[in-house]
Length: 335
Image 1 (cartoon, rainbow, N blue to C red):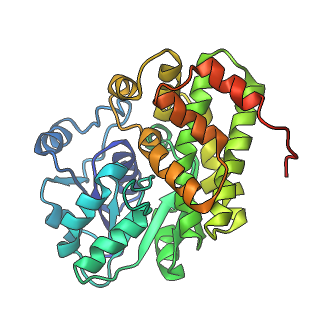
Image 2: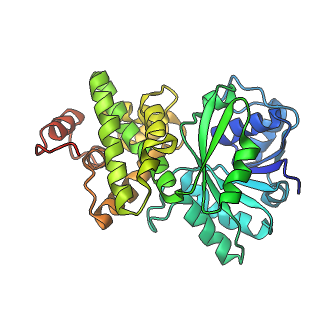
């Protein structure tokens, strides 16, 4: 295994965007998908259907054999939606070996266990008798812009400083600036919960509210996430860095954000299921809501915006009434 090689498990937008970027930098890249038809289409067309402006480098290899992808690189990256992380990690674990580093780019919290993505991967590796360093790669990184080579910053968070630096060196380029961090839990908490704030921002946008409302939702939404994070023992500075407020800003404001689009559809009267079907890709914020509420209840953290999104998804209140309820909550000091 060479230090310039990587196997990417998942052929969605972000995994493929990173594959193209890395291949363009001369890295050896192998992409796996559980869907043979998807692999054949990538081989044939050199395009990802949701990234129409991206022509994939000829050097990228594609496979439907997860073992082949796992053995292809010193680094192995899981780039599947959060709901598929456990199954993918379980399938990959037997093929991973000492000396490899595992990277996760999925953002979510498992509803039944309340584990983060890296904790799920660690658990599945342990069940297979493996103990490999795991790095959570997170931050304000829309795949559509990464695919175009636009300047982007990202955080590599790991319990292992050496693993974080390895990933930093591997991914750094003129279009990707990578910072390291040790607060894995805080980094992953931000990545999961910022999607819910973006749903709220989409609702507000569809209702015709302006920049003042958007700024309030992002700021107070981040305050909720930080409040929970402090109760969970995370580092406060994580929430005001790239993985925190940086990711909230991009996800809550961008036209690329499927979570923001999902919020707009909720405000139009669609159910969460109908909104996800309309978007045609996984809306991670919808999946994160139940786990976020469970964590808030367990740690005694008040999260009114995230609770309001839950009520909207459950059809318990209209979008307008939900905003009115948030605005007329008990008066408080900001800090």
